[in-house]
Image (cartoon, rainbow, N blue to C red; front, side, top):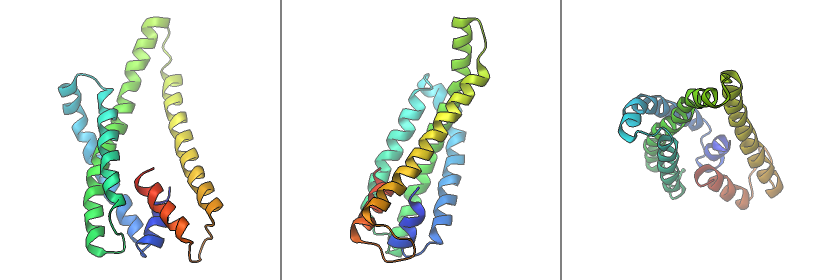
Length: 167
């Protein structure tokens, strides 16, 4: 939710946001191809989101220590972001691959197939999380003094970096 601000105010190049988003999306696509192999290896689909989010979260901590105004470090940021994207792809695909299992288990218990309800619930709560994350970031930045199109206070710049990399 704050990536565009990160590149605009910390890297001083808003156009890098598009490249960053493309690199992450490409990594996520690559990550989806690993899911069948990982599922066979771990024998437990719940491991995939844990593994994916755990590794991607650990790598995001590394991003905190990079200087986005340094072109060489921005290249390193993109390499790390590609790997983060791969693990996010594994995690997200892992979550959605469990939905049919939940449907079948529920059918076994209740003798009725709630496929649509379960898929809708997963999607709904995913959207709620994205909305709250985006709104929460905007609220925090607003409280700290963010003003669009102007020079930002140091506390706003530091908060953007923390939200982008650690939060």
